[in-house]
Length: 113
Length: 110
Image 1 (cartoon, rainbow over the protein chains, first blue to last red):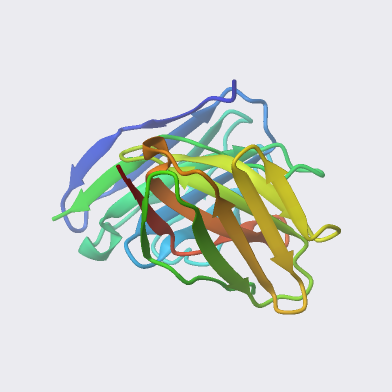
Image 2 (image 1 turned 135 degrees about the vertical axis):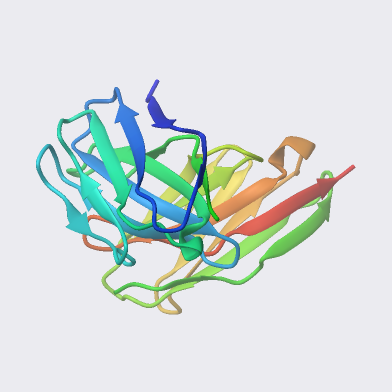
């Protein structure tokens, strides 16, 4: 079965600090995605990637960077965390091509104080 | 880009009744519409999808209807069970990405 894991599962950070959220997939999928989930907004796409070395901006990339060093790993980086970035973050993978189904990780709850 | 609106933020039904969740989209070029389910404290998982070449698809108790003229699609859950209680998200495919609605929290009451 498809497996997407995220770490950490919970994180408390201070305003202005650097935060790195990590995602690993064992599906050998080309595409990976980072979303944030907020009440009333559903899931919003932050960054995505088509493969190792590739990152693309989603709908709300401001304040976030992404890194895809390998097929399996995709990180989301908050260089200067702000309280408005308090949210639940989900990573997903998808094979691409003609298949559009995405497989989601369990989420990371981030609180920025 | 595509915008997906999910009309019901909450929905409560009695066990055994049907539940209907409605979504609309804006981009006439969208051709793929999946639905995802999120149980409490977990990530989303795929439940059913429909492509624009059909207007109805059924998988067991789940039925998806697509009205391309109205740019509307809906999820029908028949004979609801307590384990159907969750948040359901509709989505539409844009260029290599999915655009999600805001979610509907479905509660199935015994």
